[in-house]
Length: 114
Image (cartoon, rainbow, N blue to C red; front, side, top):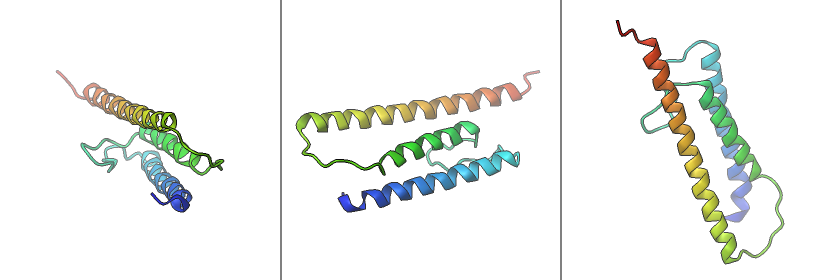
């Protein structure tokens, strides 16, 4: 909401998500996969897919640190921004569901049905 703070917010987001990715990576390397990611909502098991998701989120937040040329926004710009936000949100929701489904498949494969 305050344009001079945009860079600080993007840098803070990059740092925070990097810490989460490093913590998840450390847990996975140590062999601890049966812990909740703490992402909120239903929660997910820590996996390399979540680390990959965090790397993508870091890249998106880092894009906000790129220099920009100021210009006036028109109605089409606001519409394009709204569409980009919706598409980004849908892509994140789809990737979250894919990670959930992969975890469910792993869980089913590890259970004995005999």
